[in-house]
Length: 304
Image 1 (cartoon, one colour):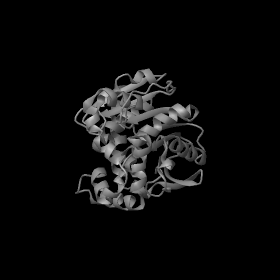
Image 2 (tube, helix red, strand yellow):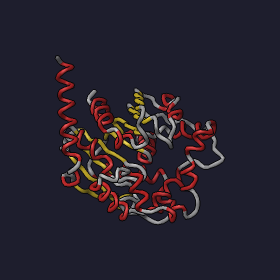
Image 3 (tube, rainbow, N blue to C red):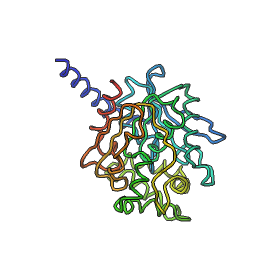
Image 4 (tube, rainbow, N blue to C red):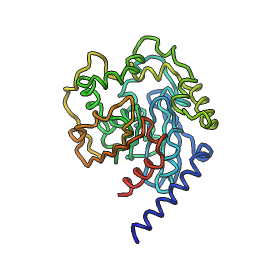
């Protein structure tokens, strides 16, 4: 009977999340944090007294990428979703040095300070996953729990780049982005097609078109120029800083860019409980493609 009640409650929560996700942009509150003179935009949803969950998007997204998970969590959590620098309503300072990983970590810390959060569950996807891993390592006092969507620990990625020719081939896009003036070869329309491939979803495509027009494509590429491993690829031999928070990793196995082999050995870099969930027949944009599977996984994991 207890299991039945839990399943019913979960189904009701998912139904409510699905109904509310589309209009979530009208329900969130906007905020801005100052990060060393750079303005970082974020939105909030839910009761500020509830347990906080901070979400960090990747390429080429913005805070709206989290709408399904925000709707699913907002009843019991205070949800914060940021626009990373360079994206949407956040500033996009010129110069690729402004997109170093340590600077991006500082943006998260600035948002948490502005929002009055001493600690939060941090969730990241793609480049947001890179930043989330790094926040957990560099600023462990800020991270209660860590949730990573389709971004293996960077040590695992670097190992695969050094030893797995298939991963090298899958990272060709990153090498392209690292070329001089690669950003000039990308368009808003191309970015929208990557983020929202469903051309029938005109509402979401319109939202993304507006967000990408407000963004800096050059800044998006600077994330790769500053932080993605470069050839010749070598494993990371620097001292290990283990993540002290509990970690949930969700990985769509059909990701054509970040192959699942990089997940092997993740336990070496986590000094707490580690849960890895792999989803067959799901690609890189795991939340977008399988919200009915990802949202319950995160909701259930945070409830225990």
